[in-house]
Image (cartoon, rainbow, N blue to C red; front, side):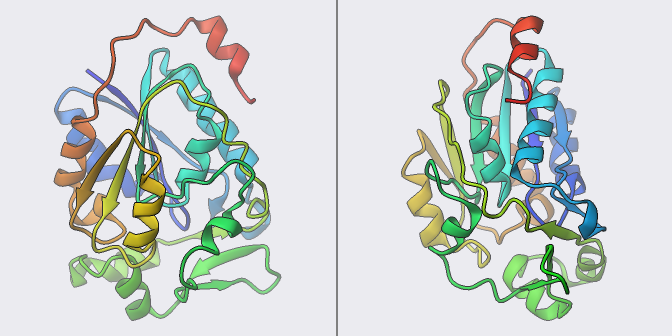
Length: 246
């Protein structure tokens, strides 16, 4: 049995992982979901990278055993920030941002085409996915069943901008990594994914758009189940607690 900690990206919460998590649990694995403070329905309450990292560390601490930490999209910024946590056995980036030390979200985005599918709110404290459902569908999940698109779009949220200028500390890690390239992704182009994946120990590929959790949960669950997890002793409670919130 493997314990997975799943970190969502922007504009959504952990519901994205629902089908994939259920498949992993069906096969006997344990799944813990992170709810990032940087996304939500009220821009005034949103956190940034610091708060996201603290919440992710808390969930890893709660596992009480080594975990496979998985980040999707901008969740890659978060899993990079906690890379030195002793409770991580393997990190997986799913078409996720993988910053160099000192790089902020804006620096990573500068290496990609403009995000034409996003719009800022009136005071610039948050960003949302465009209200143009067709454009959002085309960029984020062109492979999603059209019948599911209205519900998907209606459930999208704000992502706060407060942490976008926060540089990544990208601490040294003592565990292997896997990068999952999504070959039909239009949100984070394949070329950008391939460039970030050069730092990974393993590369997997899925022929999906940006949200395989919705369009190919079986394929994504199979990829995650293949991640090699070295045998490691349980993480002492005092060691995990001492690392929390760093």
